[in-house]
Image (cartoon, rainbow, N blue to C red; front, side, top):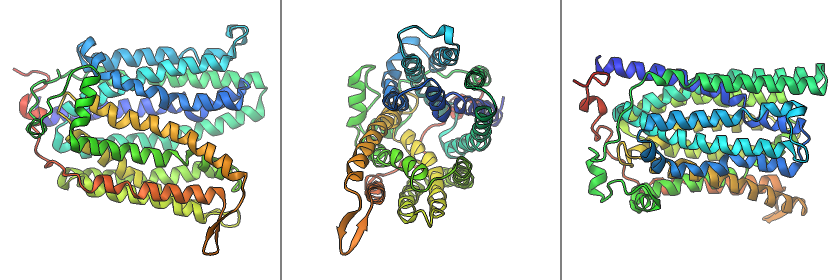
Amino acid sequence: MKPSDHLDAVTRAVLWNSMLWTAGNALTSGGFLSYFASELNASPFILSVLMATPETVGIMALAGRPIIRWLGDRKRTWFVCSLISRGALCGIPLLAIPTLRPAGIDPVWIMIGCLAIAQAAQAVAFVAYFSWLSDLVPGRRWGRFFALRQIATLVVLLVVPVAAGYARGYWRSSYSDQQALWALMGTMLLGIGLLLASLWPMLHIRSIPIRESSADLEYQRRGFTGGSVTLKGIGRALADQPFRRLCFYSWWLAFWSGLTQVVIFKFLYGPLAISLGTYYLLSSVMKLVQIPISWKTGIVADRFGNKTALILGVLATAAAMLFFCLAGIAQWWWVFGAYVMWGGWGAVNIAAPNLMLKLSPRSDNAANIALFRHVAGLIAGVSGILGGFLFARLAEQGTLAMGWEFTADPYQLLFLISFVGRALTVFWILPLREPAANFMVDVEEIAPNVDNPS
């Protein structure tokens, strides 16, 4: 098999895997899960715990590296942890059957327990999967490859959540509460089936052993060779200054982005009274803008590097907060500008992970992936809770005098604070020196015929 044929096979498998996983995840998480919990009469507090669970337990990704060592292989780790995740999810739709709910226990707490196990296993699976992909795909093609993967997920997200959301509305208005609950159960079981089906395409892709003596000479010159499988390995990863600075970028952006996640939700459904259909339209606009930006970023990243695209993407997404500040009951349409600017996430979500991989040891990079991605997720979750608390306190005071005859309501104040925090993120990126695009030795150059190395 030619190297190009191998890369085509990997790309096809990953695209099918990503599309099936995205469709399944859309039917088993987020809004659908919240609606399911609401049908089970979950209290506001339990709902907040449910929504915070995925990001909180995602910190288990830090155990990804020792688990990979224990199981002996990244592909095996991905597969085993994915099966555990899907298995744990199966307990959630069964709660729709009254006779299966344990007496004396709120069924939503059981839902939270199943979700915690599923998301913790999924976090470890993702670290193993992403590390495996970084070896399967040549470093000089990361940009275009991950852009294609993101575009595939965006296309699915344009269709599945919208169709499922309107289907839920139809069930809710046309059938009894118990029948609607059965429909939700069927939808979640379909989602779990899609998640299981997403494993099949990758089973045909060859596993690549972790190369302890990495060909990433630049990383070795900085004095880091991968560390141990314990917390000491995490500490040694953070001891590398360029990678540590990139982590600070990720964590900083996660904090200021998370601060307004609850506030934006309340703003759209409160003062602006955005309908479900309009919300889906806004989300579709954002995804449609992200698609061409993702592809262009992938090309630019492979040819010129990721840093400039990352800075522009961060500034664009930060500017979205200004459009929320301008929006009001009489001029609600300003939020369309915010969602257009959020198309900049297409650049951020390609350039930032690519830069992370380039600043990490090649192959033995599970700890780096977990630190960069999943610690940021935890920070965003905690920040979201803080944002909700701050909003509640500010709402008690009403309109606030800011000086120079300028006033702001609690929404505008938090949007402005978030804008400043997000925009300042670029100062973590500016000092970074990005390794040359073609620096690392590609797996194709080490084993031109991956399926038959001889």
